[in-house]
Length: 64
Image 1 (cartoon, one colour):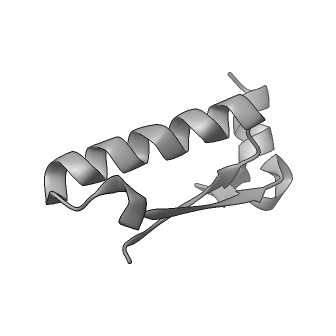
Image 2: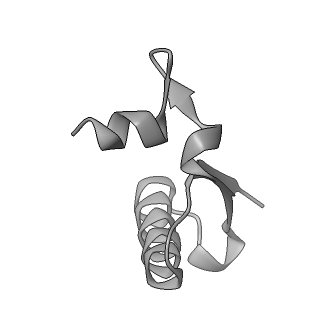
């Protein structure tokens, strides 16, 4: 069973549903594997718990 793992900041329920739907559609299209075989795991983090370039996502967003 293929697993698609997404890690990122928190999302709404609607965003999660859309992400799962689209990941599954694309993976099915590319691999030819039936959609029901794919599992999508979403792991969410607070914006102050993720960072890049020496800054948290929270800091980066506040600078935009």
